[in-house]
Length: 396
Ligand code: PLP
Image (cartoon, helix red, strand yellow):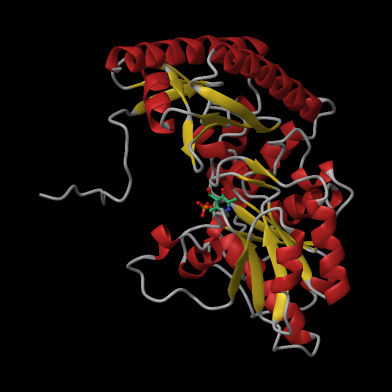
């Protein structure tokens, strides 16, 4: 008989009853160091007193009123995102896929409102991941996600990542914009080359296109800056956020320039839950922590500490780990052995990780991890690699 909970995920046979910082405690009495971070989402870890208090207090006052009324918590969160980014205006929604849908709609609407409704196609990149709605599986372009769901939604053209010539070749009279992840997360922690983002900006400006960044995984401090584009001199026209924005509470956002936001007229886009008082209280509590002076430097420092330890480990086991990728606390281990085998070996040692594409094992721990957590993670990872290397030798 089918399980009542739809079996559309490959779940580990493991459930957690509580968490504390970077640690999770399972219902069968074990503890795990959470370096998957709920897939780069639990920015403040588990049971963070400031976040839990903000959610509890807001829930007791008022959770939801609808967007028929002003929502002061949303006004405050939007103002803070604007103050700390390239943006002038913010739309709130509930998930990453929904934020990307909003971003694509806004790119199209900008051109329609500016006399170019024929500009509606979006250039995306091989290896991207933008979510699971009908349009976003087409933006993602991975045939495995599209198969069985009918014809792909039209309007998305794919070119190889980090190839500016291919990008320029793909631009046509119907092209409205470019959407890219500064570091491809699901695709295997593949970073844009230093000249790629500036090259996209230059092409967008030359051809009158909008540049949209999917910072759902890279944003909210994950790379050691509030947004990953800040590592370059480039700013986008539109940016999507979700994951860490609510620290585990579901909320997404589209941040845009004034020119784009002006195209979105009242009534042209919306959502029931988006930007409700509870979700925005969570978002504000996350920002309270991220914006403390020095916090993002600490994220970068923890990332450097982890990467250094991982590089040493890779040097010890070149037959298992061939490269360390990523930035800040979004780190990928490129493997020789199957990533799912190392993920399972880590789980055995009490370390949670996430598999990514390109046979990469991903680490995306809470941003609040301590130096001790980093040392513990490397120790557990070394034990997992040793166990795996042993079984590989035994199997030969
Ligand atoms: N975009 C990126 C870069 C992501 O990493 C994800 C989720 O992994 C999404 C979009 C989709 O977000 P959600 O699962 O919240 O719809």
